[in-house]
Length: 126
Image 1 (cartoon, one colour):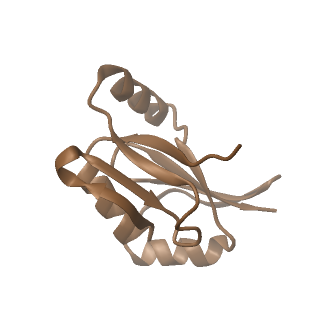
Image 2: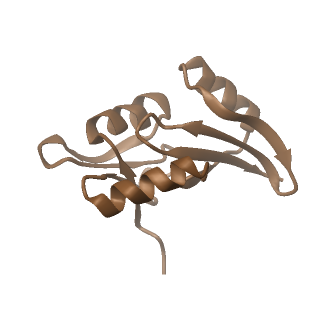
């Protein structure tokens, strides 16, 4: 069994698609703006697990997303090979980190706001 697709709720599908492709560097897997549907993937594994940028237009999704954000809980973790390089690359694109790279027992982690209602964690495993 493999994970083919997972999703995160976003406040604005168009804004999220732009952020995830232009800032984070994900590649377009599927984009149907009139259907508010966007699926992106890692450029390192374009045929790997897709990430559906799902509108949070129902109250359950909206409340869930808001509660995670207010509790300072990242909605998803992206693995990176070199935190220092990725951190500098993203800062160079104007991304503001809410938590700078920090050494932990399991590796180095950093957290940023995806501008669409979510906190995202980067993790370089030890």
